[in-house]
Length: 193
Image 1 (cartoon, rainbow, N blue to C red):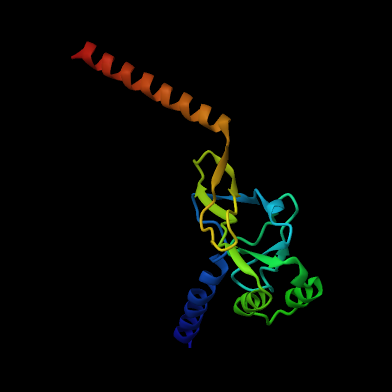
Image 2: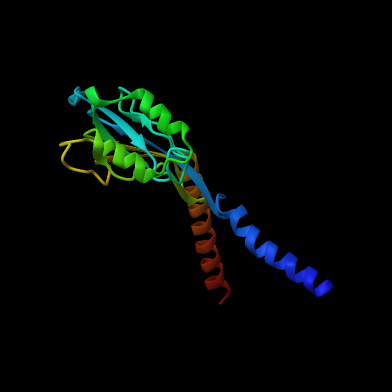
């Protein structure tokens, strides 16, 4: 009886722990947010730009791109793509209906966009990243420039990384102190030999 109970507990732990840990940050890492912008939304006044995540609208809803080109934040595993939709075919009520239907899949969203003349212009945007806790990176901002609606961009045209400069100074001071200690130790060793 005890053996069955222990085996059952072990199986439960093996099955449940990975699910609990799936959304956490790995030890030794920290999460940084990534801001994304389209620099030239105004160059395409006959289109409305929307983003949609790869998991589906239940978890990653369709969002309209702001007039300043800002692509709203998403859950870290969404990896949204951006679509240009002809303004005369964009139906905000239909988008709300899709977002509210938890059974809608990402494939159905893409099919809908294509059916109304939508074009994927940016593919799988990164909205979250994990870096080492010793990294000086605090935040990234990606800038995308759409040259043609016939071309899908896969990488940002420009990336700005915000860093924690006080951490850089601390690392430099620690390195200099370590260097001075090493030199001092080597000199003292030569004196005593």
